[in-house]
Length: 190
Image (cartoon, rainbow, N blue to C red):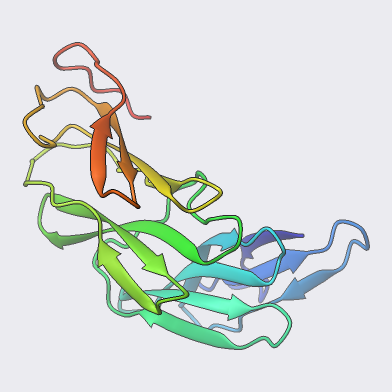
């Protein structure tokens, strides 16, 4: 199964989440957004039962949503999240219970969050200070849902020279570890 975002209605201003079954070639439209609404950044669980995505209204409000493939039921998990972003990478644990994403609460201060389906809650994983120029955090999670990686130019702990660095959060212990040591001022995105 492959989840994707498409303007299936023919309107370039509306996007829905669809699913293609590669074995049969059949395409199923999972959402039915009103005109002007966008659904994008789908992440599908390993068993294909859950598809998480971002829904953006005509007014630009972004919500975190999950749809159950078998029942077709949609659930809004978090509402009105500023600059809600799900990375292009591995943002969903294999069992579909943990999703990492980023939002911006204050200008120039994006943070990594974890949605835990078992607990039915989200929590903020990072507490990064503001920085006028940064890269996309690109939060990713391990298949077992126990480790999260992200990148930033901002100070994490005592370290920070303005270069882009890769960090790992071990969720069971809560410890954050810097994985790279780029030269000062390195600014490539990861």
